[in-house]
Length: 110
Image (cartoon, rainbow, N blue to C red; front, side, top):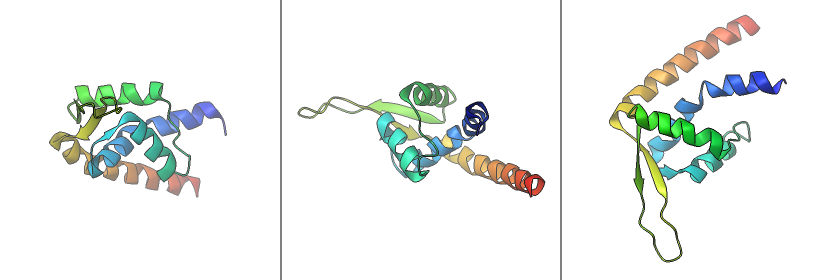
């Protein structure tokens, strides 16, 4: 598949997927990258340079918020992201929109 088209298709759903993962519990960046890769069977393999701008934008939109953990022993402080009430309210709408678009695509492609 042409990488350009694959990147464009994936880009549109990353916000929704990140919000979904944060719905479970707060996570730091590397956790999100790992879970996206693992839960998608390596369909979504993100680099930090892709993830963090999305997180910053979601934070600007008040869909997620961040907090630093305290250093413990040799563990450095980490920035954890959690979904806000506004993000929780938006997630079902995003999911419905995705399902509608996906169904429309399937009707055309089949």
